[in-house]
Length: 248
Ligand SMILES: NC(=O)c1ccc[n+]([C@@H]2O[C@H](COP(=O)([O-])OP(=O)(O)OC[C@H]3O[C@@H](n4cnc5c(N)ncnc54)[C@H](OP(=O)(O)O)[C@@H]3O)[C@@H](O)[C@H]2O)c1
Image 1 (cartoon, helix red, strand yellow):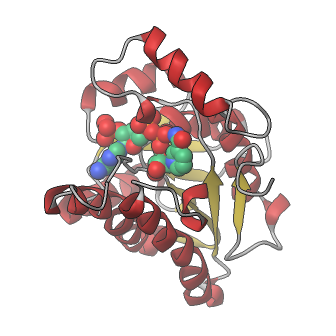
Image 2 (cartoon, helix red, strand yellow; image 1 turned 180 degrees about the vertical axis):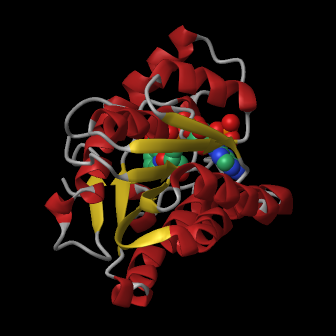
């Protein structure tokens, strides 16, 4: 119970990596708030998680929602020790055909959303708090058709450095997790059957040195490490958890 008595916010905590991180933090003794846009998904996740979880409807692209989120966190928790700015979207953006609306959809959720999430909760953060940002292995490679997603995640990687420098006086550490291809609903296109998804997961897994896609729990373990005092000498850093894909 390394996080006993701590409070945590996880944006996009209703699914995939955020949901797995919520479970890991709860199991380690923290009180956890999760956010998302869909009330239905949030409520389902809260039931699944049980325990001391606070679901908050908030779209990270809306500053009004983020201000309301802060008010709810303040009345429920008083202050925050851990923030996992995880909410994000992913979609292909071929150079020749991507429209402006898609550009804004990705940049608003992945870049603006992370920046203003941290800004919104700054007054609630305890000195010595830990902020974890969710970037992607794509932030450092040139994957065709992924220009905007990769650039958005490179911005998030950069935030870990600049925010950490800016919050140094308050001993607030900002680090990033950098997942490879992880089996979550983000990969499931509309109308895809389970069989089609399995075939997709096998194709992607074959491109990874360890031979499979990652599991959300494998990212959650890194989040737990970065949230806890075990990572006290790490700041501005990135933990790449990608089955060796960007290294081998
Ligand atoms: N899975 C991967 O392979 C992979 C790899 C690298 C990085 N990542 C990053 O990991 C993060 C989590 O992704 P995931 O794979 O766990 O996907 P996921 O299962 O689709 O979960 C995304 C979560 O974010 C929430 N969300 C999306 N847009 C939001 C918004 N504007 N405001 C608030 N919440 C929002 C979703 O809930 P609602 O839809 O209800 O809002 C959901 O809870 C993302 O930032 C993603 O880019 C994933």
